[in-house]
Length: 126
Picture 1 (tube, rainbow, N blue to C red):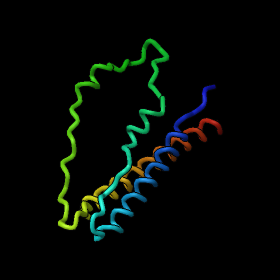
Picture 2 (cartoon, rainbow, N blue to C red; picture 1 turned 90 degrees about the vertical axis):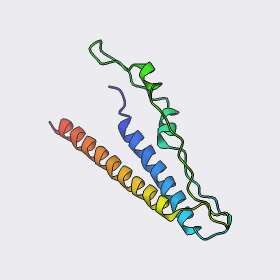
Picture 3 (cartoon, helix red, strand yellow; picture 1 turned 120 degrees about the vertical axis):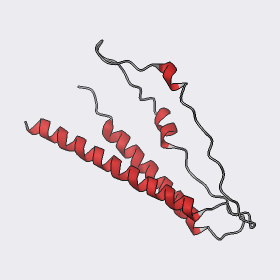
Picture 4 (cartoon, helix red, strand yellow; picture 1 turned 135 degrees about the vertical axis):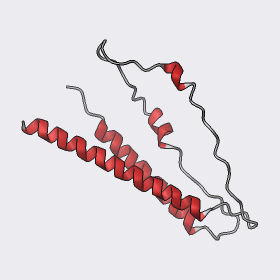
């Protein structure tokens, strides 16, 4: 039996979400500090792509992933928000939106891990 990587992935994302929430909290705390530049962490997708976990078709009946289709996705750079005269680039509205994203991602992560754990326990109990 091969190891189950879902719990490790869930744990990695939870650590990433904690780091992002800490960064956002620092941004909010320094909202009135002159010259403070808002920071954010590397997107989890980039961290996940560096983790060397790839999809594999273990059966000829599995649907394959077309690698050329990924190149057709357009990625748009995010427009910068206003920078105050003091040089501070923190926007409280933007930081609150990011905090909401972290909250939703954490809830989804916890729900998926909980559902997978329940499924695993049901299969073990029989």
